Image (cartoon, rainbow, N blue to C red; front, side, top):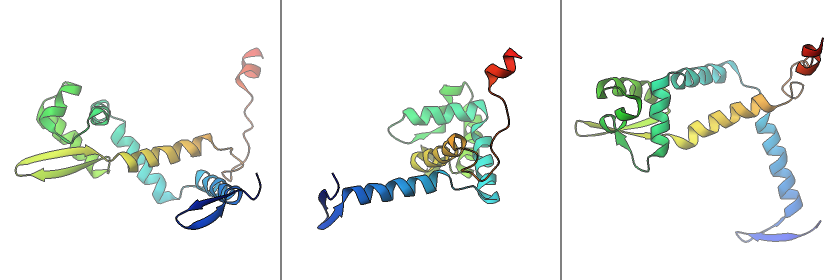
Amino acid sequence: MSGEKTHYQDDVIDRTGFKGFIDIFAQMRKHKPMDENERQELADLLRALGEFNRLSLVYELCQCQQPRNAMCLCDCCSVDASVASRHLKVLAQEGVVRMEKKGRERIYSLNRLDIAQKLRDFANQIEGEPAELGSEPSTQQPIEQVQGA
């Protein structure tokens, strides 16, 4: 398939070359170590998601096609609207949800793309090989060997 061409917006791209570029870019992005600022932002995000009621609110917003107010969302975690509002405020501060004022009402929507990307990047860090991430290879024995000892 070498040399196979495809037209994309009036440009001719060699598929194998383009795919190779995408693969290299994906690998670079997948294994880019996080700096201290990025780790702090991730810790703040995980802390915001780590409380049961806030996670329940996020889960509820995942199911919604349209933004919702706190009153509509409070049923998912068995709290009143004022408690739901406080949790939503924390989620908004961390960028998990967007808040829009409509008169006296606050409407919340999930910041799907940004949060999904941050969690996906973290999952990629977890799945990466330690040597690729710049740390020493693990010296831990596989679980089967430890249990059999």
